[in-house]
Length: 364
Ligand code: M6R
Image (cartoon, rainbow, N blue to C red; front, side):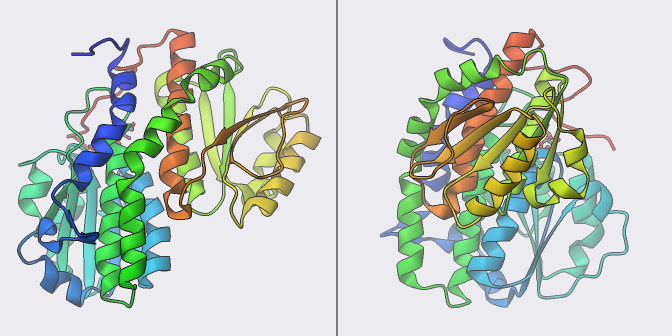
Protein backbone atom coordinates (compact mmCIF):
# COMPACT_ATOMS: atom_id res chain seq x y z
CA UNK A 1 0.00 0.00 0.00
CA UNK A 2 1.48 3.31 -1.12
CA UNK A 3 -0.57 5.32 1.36
CA UNK A 4 -0.79 8.91 0.16
CA UNK A 5 2.40 8.62 -1.85
CA UNK A 6 2.38 8.52 -5.62
CA UNK A 7 5.02 5.81 -5.80
CA UNK A 8 6.49 3.15 -3.54
CA UNK A 9 9.90 4.69 -4.05
CA UNK A 10 8.79 8.01 -2.56
CA UNK A 11 7.05 6.23 0.30
CA UNK A 12 10.19 4.26 1.02
CA UNK A 13 12.34 7.40 0.93
CA UNK A 14 10.01 9.03 3.45
CA UNK A 15 10.01 5.94 5.67
CA UNK A 16 13.71 6.33 6.36
CA UNK A 17 13.38 8.12 9.71
CA UNK A 18 11.49 5.12 11.19
CA UNK A 19 13.78 2.69 9.43
CA UNK A 20 16.79 4.29 11.12
CA UNK A 21 15.08 3.71 14.44
CA UNK A 22 14.22 0.10 13.66
CA UNK A 23 17.72 -0.90 12.68
CA UNK A 24 19.00 0.32 16.06
CA UNK A 25 16.15 -1.13 18.11
CA UNK A 26 17.17 -3.78 20.65
CA UNK A 27 20.82 -3.40 19.71
CA UNK A 28 21.85 -0.66 22.10
CA UNK A 29 21.93 -0.50 25.85
CA UNK A 30 23.30 2.47 27.80
CA UNK A 31 25.00 3.88 24.76
CA UNK A 32 26.69 0.55 23.98
CA UNK A 33 26.08 -1.88 21.16
CA UNK A 34 24.99 -5.37 22.18
CA UNK A 35 27.10 -7.78 20.21
CA UNK A 36 24.77 -10.74 20.64
CA UNK A 37 22.61 -8.96 18.04
CA UNK A 38 25.04 -10.33 15.42
CA UNK A 39 24.58 -13.96 16.57
CA UNK A 40 25.50 -16.22 19.47
CA UNK A 41 29.07 -16.79 18.28
CA UNK A 42 29.63 -13.22 17.27
CA UNK A 43 32.00 -12.22 20.09
CA UNK A 44 34.41 -15.08 19.35
CA UNK A 45 34.40 -14.27 15.64
CA UNK A 46 35.00 -10.54 16.16
CA UNK A 47 37.86 -11.33 18.58
CA UNK A 48 39.71 -13.12 15.80
CA UNK A 49 38.92 -10.79 12.91
CA UNK A 50 41.95 -9.06 11.44
CA UNK A 51 40.63 -8.40 7.93
CA UNK A 52 37.30 -7.79 6.30
CA UNK A 53 36.15 -8.80 2.84
CA UNK A 54 32.86 -7.29 1.67
CA UNK A 55 30.96 -8.76 -1.28
CA UNK A 56 27.72 -7.42 -2.80
CA UNK A 57 26.02 -6.16 -5.98
CA UNK A 58 24.54 -2.87 -7.13
CA UNK A 59 23.42 -0.50 -4.42
CA UNK A 60 24.51 -2.95 -1.73
CA UNK A 61 28.01 -2.82 -3.21
CA UNK A 62 28.02 0.95 -2.79
CA UNK A 63 27.15 0.53 0.90
CA UNK A 64 30.14 -1.80 1.16
CA UNK A 65 32.41 0.77 -0.46
CA UNK A 66 31.40 3.34 2.15
CA UNK A 67 32.04 0.84 4.95
CA UNK A 68 35.61 0.42 3.79
CA UNK A 69 36.34 4.04 4.73
CA UNK A 70 34.83 3.47 8.18
CA UNK A 71 36.52 0.14 8.87
CA UNK A 72 39.98 1.20 7.79
CA UNK A 73 39.85 4.47 9.71
CA UNK A 74 38.07 3.41 12.92
CA UNK A 75 39.16 -0.22 13.24
CA UNK A 76 42.48 0.06 11.43
CA UNK A 77 42.29 -3.33 9.71
CA UNK A 78 42.35 -3.92 5.95
CA UNK A 79 38.99 -4.07 4.19
CA UNK A 80 38.43 -5.15 0.60
CA UNK A 81 35.18 -4.61 -1.25
CA UNK A 82 34.22 -6.30 -4.51
CA UNK A 83 31.20 -6.89 -6.70
CA UNK A 84 30.04 -10.48 -6.29
CA UNK A 85 29.97 -11.30 -10.01
CA UNK A 86 33.72 -10.62 -10.23
CA UNK A 87 34.73 -11.94 -6.84
CA UNK A 88 33.15 -15.37 -7.33
CA UNK A 89 35.07 -16.13 -10.53
CA UNK A 90 38.49 -14.86 -9.52
CA UNK A 91 41.30 -16.60 -7.68
CA UNK A 92 40.92 -14.55 -4.52
CA UNK A 93 43.51 -14.71 -1.78
CA UNK A 94 41.80 -15.06 1.60
CA UNK A 95 43.06 -15.71 5.09
CA UNK A 96 41.60 -17.54 8.08
CA UNK A 97 41.36 -14.28 10.02
CA UNK A 98 39.09 -12.71 7.40
CA UNK A 99 35.49 -11.89 8.17
CA UNK A 100 33.43 -12.16 5.00
CA UNK A 101 30.55 -9.68 4.98
CA UNK A 102 27.86 -10.12 2.35
CA UNK A 103 25.38 -7.28 1.87
CA UNK A 104 22.01 -7.80 0.30
CA UNK A 105 18.54 -6.36 0.58
CA UNK A 106 16.86 -9.54 -0.68
CA UNK A 107 19.31 -12.19 0.50
CA UNK A 108 18.63 -14.03 -2.77
CA UNK A 109 20.97 -12.30 -5.23
CA UNK A 110 22.50 -15.13 -7.25
CA UNK A 111 26.04 -13.78 -7.50
CA UNK A 112 26.25 -12.77 -3.84
CA UNK A 113 25.02 -16.18 -2.71
CA UNK A 114 27.39 -17.96 -5.07
CA UNK A 115 30.29 -15.87 -3.75
CA UNK A 116 29.45 -16.88 -0.19
CA UNK A 117 29.24 -20.56 -1.12
CA UNK A 118 32.50 -20.33 -3.04
CA UNK A 119 34.66 -19.00 -0.20
CA UNK A 120 32.94 -19.73 3.10
CA UNK A 121 35.29 -22.61 3.91
CA UNK A 122 38.30 -20.37 3.41
CA UNK A 123 37.46 -17.53 5.80
CA UNK A 124 37.11 -17.11 9.54
CA UNK A 125 33.35 -16.65 9.34
CA UNK A 126 30.62 -15.10 7.22
CA UNK A 127 28.28 -12.32 8.26
CA UNK A 128 25.17 -11.49 6.22
CA UNK A 129 23.78 -7.95 6.52
CA UNK A 130 20.38 -8.44 5.02
CA UNK A 131 16.81 -7.17 4.99
CA UNK A 132 14.90 -10.41 4.49
CA UNK A 133 14.78 -12.77 7.46
CA UNK A 134 15.08 -16.42 6.55
CA UNK A 135 16.53 -15.62 3.11
CA UNK A 136 19.14 -17.97 1.62
CA UNK A 137 21.99 -15.62 2.46
CA UNK A 138 20.96 -15.41 6.11
CA UNK A 139 20.46 -19.17 6.41
CA UNK A 140 23.83 -19.99 4.90
CA UNK A 141 25.92 -17.45 6.81
CA UNK A 142 27.49 -17.97 10.25
CA UNK A 143 26.28 -14.62 11.55
CA UNK A 144 23.52 -12.29 10.48
CA UNK A 145 22.48 -8.75 11.22
CA UNK A 146 19.03 -7.90 9.93
CA UNK A 147 18.49 -4.37 8.67
CA UNK A 148 14.76 -4.36 9.54
CA UNK A 149 13.92 -1.84 6.82
CA UNK A 150 10.62 -3.58 6.06
CA UNK A 151 9.56 -4.72 2.59
CA UNK A 152 11.10 -2.64 -0.19
CA UNK A 153 8.87 -2.67 -3.27
CA UNK A 154 10.47 -0.04 -5.51
CA UNK A 155 13.13 -1.63 -7.71
CA UNK A 156 15.38 1.32 -6.94
CA UNK A 157 16.79 0.62 -3.51
CA UNK A 158 16.54 3.48 -1.00
CA UNK A 159 15.72 2.59 2.60
CA UNK A 160 17.49 -0.75 2.25
CA UNK A 161 20.69 1.15 1.43
CA UNK A 162 20.59 3.60 4.33
CA UNK A 163 19.72 0.82 6.77
CA UNK A 164 22.69 -1.18 5.49
CA UNK A 165 24.89 1.84 6.20
CA UNK A 166 23.70 1.94 9.81
CA UNK A 167 24.27 -1.81 10.18
CA UNK A 168 27.75 -1.41 8.73
CA UNK A 169 28.62 1.46 11.03
CA UNK A 170 27.45 -0.59 14.01
CA UNK A 171 29.58 -3.50 12.81
CA UNK A 172 32.54 -1.13 12.47
CA UNK A 173 32.12 -0.03 16.10
CA UNK A 174 31.90 -3.63 17.33
CA UNK A 175 35.12 -4.52 15.51
CA UNK A 176 36.73 -1.27 16.63
CA UNK A 177 36.24 -2.17 20.28
CA UNK A 178 38.78 -4.92 19.85
CA UNK A 179 41.32 -2.64 18.22
CA UNK A 180 41.45 0.22 20.67
CA UNK A 181 38.43 2.30 19.70
CA UNK A 182 37.61 4.11 22.92
CA UNK A 183 34.34 3.73 24.80
CA UNK A 184 33.86 7.50 24.51
CA UNK A 185 34.10 7.35 20.73
CA UNK A 186 31.67 4.43 20.62
CA UNK A 187 29.20 6.27 22.83
CA UNK A 188 29.53 9.43 20.83
CA UNK A 189 28.87 7.59 17.57
CA UNK A 190 25.99 5.60 19.02
CA UNK A 191 24.52 8.96 20.07
CA UNK A 192 24.91 10.23 16.51
CA UNK A 193 23.18 7.08 15.21
CA UNK A 194 20.32 7.56 17.65
CA UNK A 195 19.86 11.10 16.36
CA UNK A 196 19.49 9.85 12.78
CA UNK A 197 15.67 9.88 12.65
CA UNK A 198 15.58 13.65 13.29
CA UNK A 199 18.46 14.24 10.91
CA UNK A 200 16.67 12.34 8.13
CA UNK A 201 13.46 14.25 8.87
CA UNK A 202 15.28 17.51 8.34
CA UNK A 203 16.87 16.22 5.12
CA UNK A 204 13.46 15.27 3.77
CA UNK A 205 12.50 18.92 4.05
CA UNK A 206 14.74 19.44 1.05
CA UNK A 207 12.16 17.64 -1.07
CA UNK A 208 10.73 20.80 -2.64
CA UNK A 209 14.00 22.51 -3.52
CA UNK A 210 15.34 19.20 -4.90
CA UNK A 211 12.19 18.79 -7.02
CA UNK A 212 12.85 22.29 -8.39
CA UNK A 213 16.47 21.38 -9.14
CA UNK A 214 15.29 18.24 -10.96
CA UNK A 215 13.73 20.39 -13.69
CA UNK A 216 17.19 21.13 -15.05
CA UNK A 217 17.76 17.42 -15.76
CA UNK A 218 14.58 16.36 -17.53
CA UNK A 219 15.92 17.26 -21.00
CA UNK A 220 19.47 16.09 -20.41
CA UNK A 221 20.95 12.88 -21.76
CA UNK A 222 24.01 12.62 -19.54
CA UNK A 223 25.11 13.59 -16.04
CA UNK A 224 28.33 13.36 -14.10
CA UNK A 225 28.43 12.79 -10.33
CA UNK A 226 31.48 13.76 -8.31
CA UNK A 227 32.55 13.09 -4.74
CA UNK A 228 35.71 12.53 -2.76
CA UNK A 229 36.55 10.13 0.04
CA UNK A 230 33.53 8.31 1.44
CA UNK A 231 31.33 10.58 -0.65
CA UNK A 232 32.67 9.01 -3.84
CA UNK A 233 30.53 5.86 -3.35
CA UNK A 234 27.62 8.21 -2.58
CA UNK A 235 28.18 9.78 -6.00
CA UNK A 236 28.19 6.27 -7.50
CA UNK A 237 24.91 5.49 -5.80
CA UNK A 238 23.42 8.80 -7.02
CA UNK A 239 24.45 7.97 -10.59
CA UNK A 240 23.02 4.44 -10.37
CA UNK A 241 19.71 5.75 -9.06
CA UNK A 242 19.45 8.35 -11.83
CA UNK A 243 20.22 5.91 -14.65
CA UNK A 244 18.02 3.19 -13.20
CA UNK A 245 14.78 5.13 -13.05
CA UNK A 246 15.17 8.11 -15.39
CA UNK A 247 17.26 6.35 -18.07
CA UNK A 248 19.66 9.29 -18.16
CA UNK A 249 23.21 8.12 -18.69
CA UNK A 250 25.06 8.96 -15.48
CA UNK A 251 28.60 8.27 -14.34
CA UNK A 252 30.31 8.87 -11.05
CA UNK A 253 33.94 9.77 -10.62
CA UNK A 254 36.14 10.48 -7.67
CA UNK A 255 36.64 14.20 -8.30
CA UNK A 256 40.41 13.84 -8.45
CA UNK A 257 40.06 11.67 -11.57
CA UNK A 258 38.41 14.45 -13.61
CA UNK A 259 41.62 15.58 -15.24
CA UNK A 260 42.48 12.01 -16.16
CA UNK A 261 39.77 11.77 -18.77
CA UNK A 262 36.16 12.68 -17.96
CA UNK A 263 36.81 16.45 -18.09
CA UNK A 264 36.85 16.01 -21.88
CA UNK A 265 33.11 15.29 -21.72
CA UNK A 266 32.19 18.46 -19.88
CA UNK A 267 30.29 21.14 -21.76
CA UNK A 268 27.02 23.01 -21.27
CA UNK A 269 25.03 19.83 -21.92
CA UNK A 270 26.74 17.83 -19.22
CA UNK A 271 25.37 18.73 -15.79
CA UNK A 272 27.71 17.91 -12.93
CA UNK A 273 26.37 16.98 -9.53
CA UNK A 274 28.79 17.23 -6.62
CA UNK A 275 28.39 15.95 -3.09
CA UNK A 276 30.57 18.34 -1.15
CA UNK A 277 30.22 18.38 2.63
CA UNK A 278 32.23 20.92 4.51
CA UNK A 279 35.10 18.54 5.31
CA UNK A 280 38.86 18.41 4.81
CA UNK A 281 38.39 17.37 1.16
CA UNK A 282 36.34 20.43 0.29
CA UNK A 283 39.17 22.66 -0.90
CA UNK A 284 40.39 20.00 -3.27
CA UNK A 285 36.88 19.39 -4.52
CA UNK A 286 36.35 23.12 -5.08
CA UNK A 287 39.25 23.31 -7.45
CA UNK A 288 37.78 20.33 -9.34
CA UNK A 289 34.50 22.20 -9.58
CA UNK A 290 36.25 25.27 -11.00
CA UNK A 291 37.63 23.07 -13.73
CA UNK A 292 34.06 22.08 -14.59
CA UNK A 293 32.82 25.70 -14.59
CA UNK A 294 35.68 26.78 -16.81
CA UNK A 295 34.37 24.34 -19.46
CA UNK A 296 30.82 25.62 -19.24
CA UNK A 297 29.50 22.66 -17.24
CA UNK A 298 26.48 23.46 -15.10
CA UNK A 299 27.07 22.60 -11.44
CA UNK A 300 24.62 21.28 -8.85
CA UNK A 301 26.29 21.16 -5.47
CA UNK A 302 25.02 19.55 -2.28
CA UNK A 303 27.04 21.06 0.49
CA UNK A 304 27.25 21.77 4.22
CA UNK A 305 26.67 24.97 6.14
CA UNK A 306 29.48 27.38 6.71
CA UNK A 307 31.42 26.92 3.50
CA UNK A 308 31.94 29.24 0.59
CA UNK A 309 30.36 27.64 -2.47
CA UNK A 310 27.66 30.10 -3.50
CA UNK A 311 24.88 30.18 -6.06
CA UNK A 312 26.00 32.08 -9.13
CA UNK A 313 25.60 31.80 -12.86
CA UNK A 314 25.82 28.06 -13.65
CA UNK A 315 26.09 26.99 -10.02
CA UNK A 316 23.09 25.85 -7.95
CA UNK A 317 23.71 24.86 -4.37
CA UNK A 318 21.63 23.13 -1.72
CA UNK A 319 22.80 23.32 1.86
CA UNK A 320 22.41 20.31 4.14
CA UNK A 321 22.19 20.56 7.92
CA UNK A 322 25.36 19.95 9.94
CA UNK A 323 26.09 16.26 10.40
CA UNK A 324 28.68 14.10 12.14
CA UNK A 325 31.50 13.57 9.59
CA UNK A 326 31.05 9.77 9.67
CA UNK A 327 27.39 10.14 8.81
CA UNK A 328 27.97 12.39 5.80
CA UNK A 329 27.66 9.51 3.31
CA UNK A 330 24.30 8.62 4.77
CA UNK A 331 23.01 12.20 4.87
CA UNK A 332 24.13 13.14 1.35
CA UNK A 333 22.41 10.05 -0.08
CA UNK A 334 18.96 11.45 0.77
CA UNK A 335 18.88 14.45 -1.62
CA UNK A 336 20.31 12.26 -4.39
CA UNK A 337 17.49 9.74 -3.91
CA UNK A 338 15.01 12.60 -4.14
CA UNK A 339 16.73 14.07 -7.19
CA UNK A 340 16.55 10.83 -9.18
CA UNK A 341 12.95 10.35 -8.11
CA UNK A 342 11.84 13.80 -9.28
CA UNK A 343 13.74 13.59 -12.55
CA UNK A 344 12.04 10.24 -13.28
CA UNK A 345 8.63 11.68 -12.46
CA UNK A 346 9.26 14.62 -14.81
CA UNK A 347 10.30 12.21 -17.53
CA UNK A 348 7.23 10.08 -16.95
CA UNK A 349 9.07 6.77 -16.56
CA UNK A 350 7.81 3.84 -14.52
CA UNK A 351 9.47 4.82 -11.27
CA UNK A 352 8.78 1.69 -9.24
CA UNK A 353 9.27 -0.79 -12.04
CA UNK A 354 11.92 0.53 -14.43
CA UNK A 355 12.27 -1.22 -17.77
CA UNK A 356 14.52 -4.29 -18.05
CA UNK A 357 15.10 -4.58 -14.28
CA UNK A 358 13.92 -6.99 -11.58
CA UNK A 359 13.78 -6.30 -7.87
CA UNK A 360 15.68 -9.42 -7.02
CA UNK A 361 18.33 -10.76 -9.38
CA UNK A 362 18.12 -14.48 -8.65
CA UNK A 363 19.76 -15.58 -11.88
CA UNK A 364 23.25 -14.79 -13.06
O1 M6R B 1 18.97 -7.62 -2.99
P1 M6R B 1 20.37 -7.08 -3.19
O2 M6R B 1 20.73 -5.99 -2.27
O3 M6R B 1 21.40 -8.20 -3.19
O4 M6R B 1 20.34 -6.50 -4.67
C1 M6R B 1 21.51 -6.03 -5.27
C2 M6R B 1 21.20 -5.20 -6.50
O5 M6R B 1 20.54 -5.97 -7.48
C3 M6R B 1 20.35 -3.97 -6.17
O6 M6R B 1 20.91 -3.19 -5.16
C4 M6R B 1 20.14 -3.11 -7.42
O7 M6R B 1 21.34 -2.54 -7.82
C5 M6R B 1 19.07 -2.05 -7.13
N1 M6R B 1 18.04 -2.11 -8.11
C6 M6R B 1 19.62 -0.66 -7.07
O8 M6R B 1 18.65 0.30 -6.85
